[in-house]
Length: 187
Image 1: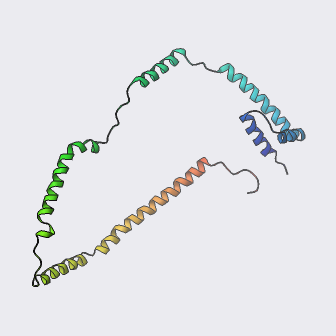
Image 2 (image 1 turned 135 degrees about the vertical axis):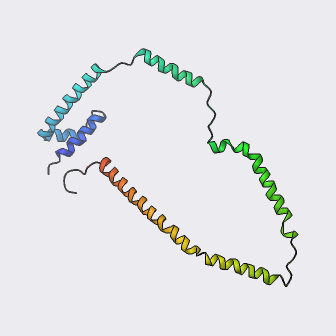
Image 3 (image 1 turned 180 degrees about the horizontal axis):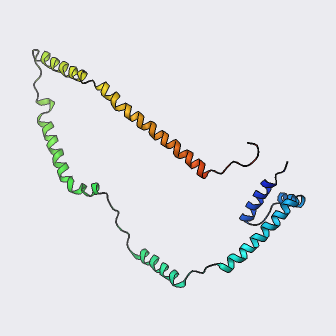
């Protein structure tokens, strides 16, 4: 079976890395005239490219290089800027007294209306509290909260399905554009 395409690809990779070839590739080049000719062409091309690259190399402007170094040194001499806060966090120091006042009011209301201030329910008042609780439970049942939860859940499920579909499309596009094609030959 002819694996010259594989040898050429591996030799090209080694030439790009450091230009040295392991013994197994040298043995293959000695046995295969097609690959040997291809290797000679690649070596000549590599030598010409190296010669042209050194001849055409652009030297950076000394003035530009000096300006860049000066700007880097100027930035290094400047003190670091204080961290920036989001607009919400900027108002936090100003809101602290208001939040403390609100907390004090809530604590005072809880203290004034605490459980130790209420009178114990009399035997006659217990059925009234029970009937009030029963009315509240009936109101909750009449609001059909479970149906509301189902109505909210359906659009959320649809949205999750759309997000999953978009994710599949993106992954397919990434695989098509960035993954290498499969090598020739049997799968």
